[in-house]
Each structure stands twice: as structure tokens, then as C-alpha cells.
Length: 189
Image (cartoon, rainbow, N blue to C red; front, side, top):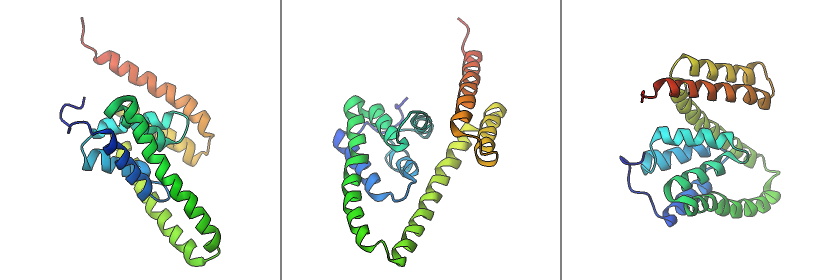
């Protein structure tokens, strides 16, 4: 699946890239930053492969971007790649977060700090929206997929149904439809 892409990077490269992503992404939007670095800039994965990994990462319990880092690292270099990516996305930003939490306790009362944080949050939402729209474009190919996407969105956003209930219904339905599609496309023996 990676034939047309650049050779798999080394463990140090994986750690460095995920550390950079973790250290330079503020307020969310990490999956968009990972897409840009891993797919668009470095060519380590194709966009469709990345989006499949993103879907899996979001389906697993835990922090989505850590799951995604683990999945990408594993795809690139196996177990050690997964470890390098997870360590890179977690450890350096955690160290900075501890230092910033200590500093924020000293300046948290400042209105300027809150204004700056609001700006950072707006940029992060924009990055998340870009990734979500890109994923939706790939996921909404065909009427059944589009209906699942729209129903899931409406159930959570408009009708405000509990996320676990929506996922509990829509995920098996989506998997079943994908299985039927794959079965119908399989060549005859």
C-alpha cells in the first residue's frame, strides 16, 4: 500500500516529527497538523490511508491523536515506530505543559492572556474543521455513506442524542454496509 510513497522513515525521524507536532499544536487540531506533516509534506502515507487510520484512532478508546500517532508509527516501523510516535506526541508536550501550567498560575488573571488563548483556540478549531471536511469528502462517496454521515451528524449536532448511543447504532450499520459493498465487489473464484 506504500509502494508509491517515500521510504519509511527511521525511528528518530518519527519521534522528531511527532514531537514537533505535539510542541507546535495549540488548543487542538492535531490530526490536521499530523495530516499535513505525514501525508502532504513528507509523503509517508497516502491521504486515504491516513483517513482510514484517523477513523480507527477515533473508534478506539483513549486520546484520538495518541491513537493516531501509534497507528502511524506502527504502519511505518512496527512496534518500535508506534512507541517512537507515541513518545514524541506525548512526552515533550507534557513537559512543556507542566512548565506552562506553573507559569499560567502566575499570569492567569491577565485579560491579555485570555484573549491570546481565545485566538489560539479559534485557529485550532479551523484546523480541525479543515481535517473534518477533508475526511467527510472521502467518507461521503456514495449515497449510503452520505446518509450515514448526515444521520450521525444530525443525531449528535441537531438532536443532541448521546454520543455512545449514536456510535453504538451507526458504527455497526456502517460496518455492515461496508462489508456488503466489499463482498459484492469481490471477484468470483
